[in-house]
Length: 242
Image 1 (cartoon, rainbow, N blue to C red):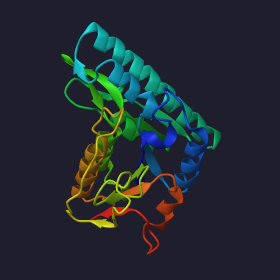
Image 2: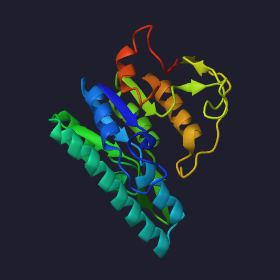
Image 3: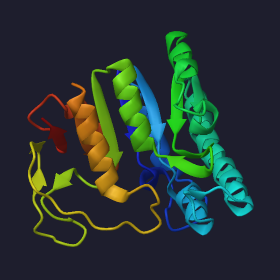
Protein backbone atom coordinates (compact mmCIF):
# COMPACT_ATOMS: atom_id res chain seq x y z
CA UNK A 1 0.00 0.00 0.00
CA UNK A 2 1.13 3.53 -0.78
CA UNK A 3 0.24 6.84 0.83
CA UNK A 4 0.21 9.64 -1.71
CA UNK A 5 0.11 13.39 -1.21
CA UNK A 6 -1.16 15.59 -4.05
CA UNK A 7 0.09 19.13 -3.62
CA UNK A 8 -2.53 21.86 -3.72
CA UNK A 9 -0.69 23.57 -6.58
CA UNK A 10 -1.46 20.57 -8.79
CA UNK A 11 -5.24 20.48 -8.41
CA UNK A 12 -5.99 24.18 -7.86
CA UNK A 13 -4.89 27.49 -9.30
CA UNK A 14 -3.14 28.85 -6.19
CA UNK A 15 -3.58 32.44 -7.37
CA UNK A 16 -7.33 32.25 -7.97
CA UNK A 17 -9.61 31.69 -5.00
CA UNK A 18 -11.28 28.25 -5.00
CA UNK A 19 -10.44 27.32 -8.58
CA UNK A 20 -10.34 23.53 -8.97
CA UNK A 21 -8.25 22.03 -11.77
CA UNK A 22 -10.52 19.09 -12.61
CA UNK A 23 -8.69 17.65 -15.60
CA UNK A 24 -5.34 17.69 -13.80
CA UNK A 25 -6.91 15.90 -10.83
CA UNK A 26 -8.43 13.25 -13.08
CA UNK A 27 -5.06 12.56 -14.71
CA UNK A 28 -3.38 12.03 -11.35
CA UNK A 29 -6.16 9.88 -9.88
CA UNK A 30 -6.21 7.62 -12.94
CA UNK A 31 -2.54 6.82 -12.38
CA UNK A 32 -2.44 6.42 -8.61
CA UNK A 33 -5.61 4.28 -8.51
CA UNK A 34 -3.82 1.42 -10.27
CA UNK A 35 -2.55 0.27 -6.87
CA UNK A 36 -3.83 0.22 -3.28
CA UNK A 37 -3.43 3.62 -1.68
CA UNK A 38 -4.48 6.24 0.85
CA UNK A 39 -4.72 9.78 -0.46
CA UNK A 40 -3.83 13.14 1.09
CA UNK A 41 -4.27 16.44 -0.73
CA UNK A 42 -3.16 19.99 -0.07
CA UNK A 43 -5.30 23.11 -0.02
CA UNK A 44 -3.97 25.37 -2.73
CA UNK A 45 -6.32 28.29 -3.31
CA UNK A 46 -9.03 26.59 -1.23
CA UNK A 47 -7.00 26.72 1.96
CA UNK A 48 -4.08 29.10 1.85
CA UNK A 49 -5.79 32.27 0.62
CA UNK A 50 -8.49 32.32 3.30
CA UNK A 51 -6.02 31.25 6.01
CA UNK A 52 -3.78 34.16 5.16
CA UNK A 53 -6.73 36.57 5.03
CA UNK A 54 -7.83 35.69 8.58
CA UNK A 55 -4.32 35.45 10.04
CA UNK A 56 -4.34 31.70 10.59
CA UNK A 57 -2.84 29.96 12.40
CA UNK A 58 -3.31 32.30 15.33
CA UNK A 59 -4.68 32.92 18.80
CA UNK A 60 -8.33 32.13 19.40
CA UNK A 61 -10.68 35.07 18.73
CA UNK A 62 -14.04 35.69 17.05
CA UNK A 63 -12.28 36.54 13.80
CA UNK A 64 -10.02 33.47 14.02
CA UNK A 65 -13.01 31.20 14.69
CA UNK A 66 -14.86 32.73 11.73
CA UNK A 67 -11.74 32.25 9.60
CA UNK A 68 -11.49 28.62 10.68
CA UNK A 69 -15.09 28.09 9.57
CA UNK A 70 -14.35 29.65 6.18
CA UNK A 71 -11.22 27.54 5.71
CA UNK A 72 -12.98 24.36 6.78
CA UNK A 73 -15.86 25.04 4.39
CA UNK A 74 -13.44 25.76 1.54
CA UNK A 75 -11.35 22.66 2.22
CA UNK A 76 -14.44 20.49 2.49
CA UNK A 77 -15.53 21.83 -0.90
CA UNK A 78 -12.17 20.90 -2.43
CA UNK A 79 -12.28 17.47 -0.81
CA UNK A 80 -15.77 16.96 -2.19
CA UNK A 81 -14.47 17.77 -5.68
CA UNK A 82 -11.80 15.08 -5.29
CA UNK A 83 -14.18 12.54 -3.74
CA UNK A 84 -16.76 13.12 -6.50
CA UNK A 85 -14.18 12.41 -9.18
CA UNK A 86 -13.05 9.24 -7.43
CA UNK A 87 -16.54 7.84 -6.93
CA UNK A 88 -17.38 8.54 -10.59
CA UNK A 89 -14.31 6.49 -11.45
CA UNK A 90 -15.60 3.62 -9.29
CA UNK A 91 -13.27 4.23 -6.35
CA UNK A 92 -14.94 3.95 -2.90
CA UNK A 93 -13.54 7.11 -1.32
CA UNK A 94 -14.32 8.97 1.90
CA UNK A 95 -12.99 12.29 3.20
CA UNK A 96 -11.45 12.94 6.63
CA UNK A 97 -10.60 16.35 8.11
CA UNK A 98 -8.12 17.02 10.95
CA UNK A 99 -10.84 19.21 12.49
CA UNK A 100 -12.92 16.12 13.22
CA UNK A 101 -9.98 13.89 14.15
CA UNK A 102 -8.57 16.21 16.82
CA UNK A 103 -9.29 15.01 20.37
CA UNK A 104 -7.91 17.95 22.38
CA UNK A 105 -4.47 16.42 22.87
CA UNK A 106 -3.77 14.46 19.67
CA UNK A 107 -5.29 13.29 16.40
CA UNK A 108 -7.34 10.11 16.57
CA UNK A 109 -6.93 8.26 13.28
CA UNK A 110 -9.05 5.26 14.29
CA UNK A 111 -11.92 6.26 11.90
CA UNK A 112 -9.38 6.36 9.06
CA UNK A 113 -8.01 2.95 10.01
CA UNK A 114 -11.50 1.44 10.17
CA UNK A 115 -12.43 2.90 6.78
CA UNK A 116 -9.28 1.50 5.18
CA UNK A 117 -9.86 -1.93 6.71
CA UNK A 118 -13.38 -1.93 5.23
CA UNK A 119 -12.09 -1.35 1.71
CA UNK A 120 -12.65 2.40 1.61
CA UNK A 121 -9.96 4.75 0.27
CA UNK A 122 -9.47 7.45 2.93
CA UNK A 123 -8.89 10.91 1.45
CA UNK A 124 -7.40 13.25 4.04
CA UNK A 125 -6.55 16.93 3.68
CA UNK A 126 -4.92 19.79 5.49
CA UNK A 127 -7.38 21.89 7.50
CA UNK A 128 -7.86 24.30 10.39
CA UNK A 129 -8.68 22.96 13.85
CA UNK A 130 -9.17 24.46 17.32
CA UNK A 131 -6.76 23.53 20.10
CA UNK A 132 -7.39 25.20 23.47
CA UNK A 133 -6.59 28.90 22.93
CA UNK A 134 -5.43 28.64 19.33
CA UNK A 135 -6.70 28.01 15.84
CA UNK A 136 -4.07 25.80 14.25
CA UNK A 137 -3.53 24.30 10.83
CA UNK A 138 -2.59 20.70 10.26
CA UNK A 139 -0.99 20.45 6.84
CA UNK A 140 -1.25 17.56 4.44
CA UNK A 141 2.50 17.05 4.91
CA UNK A 142 2.00 16.62 8.67
CA UNK A 143 -0.72 14.07 7.92
CA UNK A 144 1.66 12.14 5.66
CA UNK A 145 4.05 11.76 8.60
CA UNK A 146 1.25 10.51 10.87
CA UNK A 147 0.03 8.01 8.26
CA UNK A 148 3.57 6.72 7.68
CA UNK A 149 3.87 6.07 11.40
CA UNK A 150 0.49 4.34 11.65
CA UNK A 151 0.32 2.28 8.45
CA UNK A 152 4.04 1.68 7.70
CA UNK A 153 3.22 1.75 3.97
CA UNK A 154 5.35 0.42 1.13
CA UNK A 155 6.10 4.01 0.16
CA UNK A 156 5.21 7.64 0.81
CA UNK A 157 4.93 9.63 -2.41
CA UNK A 158 4.78 13.41 -2.45
CA UNK A 159 3.50 14.90 -5.72
CA UNK A 160 4.51 18.53 -6.18
CA UNK A 161 5.01 20.91 -9.13
CA UNK A 162 8.77 20.34 -9.40
CA UNK A 163 10.76 17.33 -10.64
CA UNK A 164 12.22 16.61 -7.21
CA UNK A 165 14.75 18.08 -4.79
CA UNK A 166 17.33 20.37 -6.40
CA UNK A 167 20.55 21.87 -5.11
CA UNK A 168 18.95 25.29 -5.72
CA UNK A 169 15.50 26.63 -6.61
CA UNK A 170 14.86 25.47 -10.23
CA UNK A 171 12.18 28.13 -10.67
CA UNK A 172 14.85 30.79 -10.20
CA UNK A 173 18.10 29.11 -11.21
CA UNK A 174 17.93 27.27 -14.55
CA UNK A 175 21.24 25.56 -13.75
CA UNK A 176 19.91 23.94 -10.57
CA UNK A 177 20.64 20.20 -10.53
CA UNK A 178 18.15 17.49 -9.64
CA UNK A 179 19.22 15.33 -6.70
CA UNK A 180 17.93 11.87 -7.67
CA UNK A 181 18.95 10.21 -4.41
CA UNK A 182 18.93 12.59 -1.45
CA UNK A 183 21.27 11.73 1.39
CA UNK A 184 21.84 14.94 3.32
CA UNK A 185 23.01 17.35 0.63
CA UNK A 186 22.78 21.09 1.34
CA UNK A 187 19.92 22.71 -0.55
CA UNK A 188 18.21 26.10 -0.68
CA UNK A 189 14.54 26.96 -0.33
CA UNK A 190 12.62 30.07 -1.30
CA UNK A 191 9.43 31.45 0.26
CA UNK A 192 6.14 30.46 -1.36
CA UNK A 193 3.41 33.04 -1.94
CA UNK A 194 0.10 32.30 -0.21
CA UNK A 195 1.51 29.20 1.54
CA UNK A 196 0.71 29.26 5.28
CA UNK A 197 2.06 25.77 5.97
CA UNK A 198 5.77 26.40 5.52
CA UNK A 199 6.34 25.96 1.78
CA UNK A 200 8.89 23.50 0.43
CA UNK A 201 11.02 23.59 3.58
CA UNK A 202 8.13 22.13 5.61
CA UNK A 203 7.41 19.54 2.93
CA UNK A 204 11.06 18.58 2.87
CA UNK A 205 11.09 18.12 6.65
CA UNK A 206 8.02 15.88 6.41
CA UNK A 207 9.65 13.76 3.70
CA UNK A 208 12.70 13.26 5.90
CA UNK A 209 10.52 12.19 8.82
CA UNK A 210 8.69 9.63 6.65
CA UNK A 211 12.01 8.17 5.51
CA UNK A 212 13.36 8.08 9.07
CA UNK A 213 10.41 5.84 9.92
CA UNK A 214 11.71 3.29 7.43
CA UNK A 215 9.23 4.19 4.69
CA UNK A 216 10.54 4.58 1.13
CA UNK A 217 9.90 8.23 0.34
CA UNK A 218 9.78 10.01 -3.01
CA UNK A 219 9.21 13.51 -4.37
CA UNK A 220 7.79 13.46 -7.91
CA UNK A 221 6.45 16.05 -10.33
CA UNK A 222 2.69 15.52 -10.23
CA UNK A 223 2.34 17.08 -13.68
CA UNK A 224 3.72 13.76 -14.87
CA UNK A 225 2.06 11.26 -12.50
CA UNK A 226 3.03 8.36 -14.76
CA UNK A 227 6.52 8.70 -13.28
CA UNK A 228 5.19 6.87 -10.24
CA UNK A 229 5.19 3.70 -12.32
CA UNK A 230 8.96 4.09 -12.94
CA UNK A 231 9.99 4.31 -9.28
CA UNK A 232 11.81 0.97 -9.29
CA UNK A 233 13.36 1.46 -12.74
CA UNK A 234 16.34 3.29 -14.11
CA UNK A 235 13.96 5.60 -15.97
CA UNK A 236 12.67 7.19 -12.78
CA UNK A 237 12.69 10.99 -12.69
CA UNK A 238 12.32 12.41 -9.20
CA UNK A 239 14.05 12.28 -5.84
CA UNK A 240 14.30 9.23 -3.63
CA UNK A 241 15.15 9.84 0.03
CA UNK A 242 17.78 7.31 1.14
